[in-house]
Image 1 (cartoon, rainbow, N blue to C red):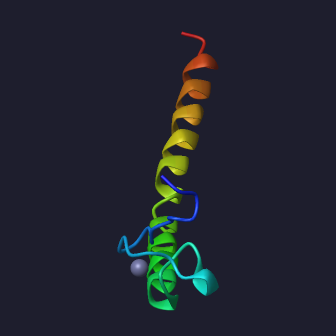
Image 2: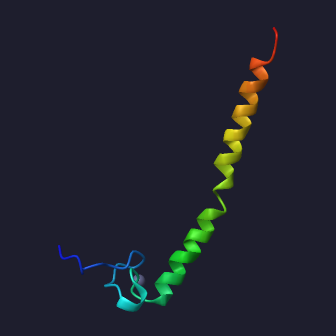
Amino acid sequence: MSPKAAACPVCGQPSAPESRPFCGTACRDRDLLQWLGEGYRVPGPAADEATQKNGNYGLDSEPD
Ligand SMILES: [Zn+2]
């Protein structure tokens, strides 16, 4: 494997020097859109973790 043989992570074609690591601006934009799409799902698990913390605190402060 040669270090220069980098393939586009989106379509697998050889990457272009001006838009590495992608083969072109089309794949670069597509990858960026995928990142933005996944970003919207991040707040989900984080909110769930906060709820669990509150639940434990409530049980701990209960006298009975
Ligand atoms: Zn590509």
